[in-house]
Length: 92
Image (cartoon, rainbow, N blue to C red):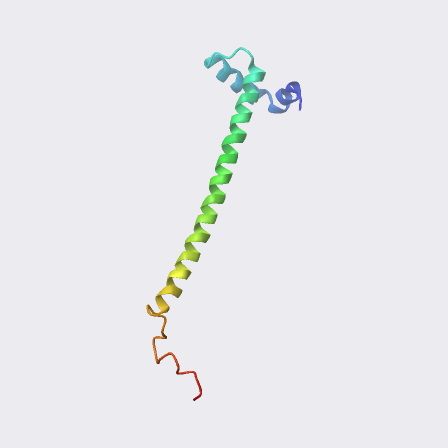
């Protein structure tokens, strides 16, 4: 997309807002400033996307850890079953 197309697609209302921002921060090349803002917005959006993924995986890991903790609590400390002995299942 060329810079001119970008400016047209942005629309007059948003372009005026962008011009006010550029003037406020002392940028003379408004198109370049618009591209810079777009790059920053994309980078920030990607950052939030990665954070959402990380939070999702963190929840999955927490659930797995809780399941393992429950299994570990059922497993006896010395390796023997909680009821009976080692050879209770042996038929002789």
